[in-house]
Image (cartoon, rainbow, N blue to C red; front, side):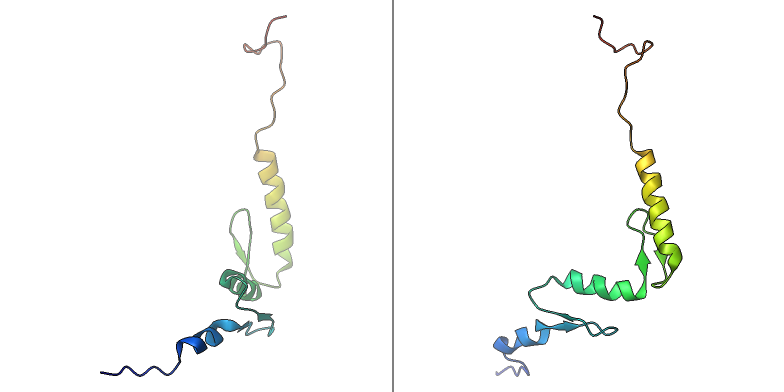
Length: 94
């Protein structure tokens, strides 16, 4: 029994070789990770806050302001280094 295949194995790499963004027609080579291509296309469709993952339309000016506020709030919530005080029970005696 012979199995017919429309694409030979050597030609299969050509099918996946180059990816083209359907929106801006930017080319991505096969050597670049597929995630880079998909992330690029998604950037045309939606913007996602890297801190809280809230989504925004691609041309939304509010996105930049939101991310800056989110980053600032995130920095403020990080634990601050402790400074010894007179009432701190863990301060070493001299």
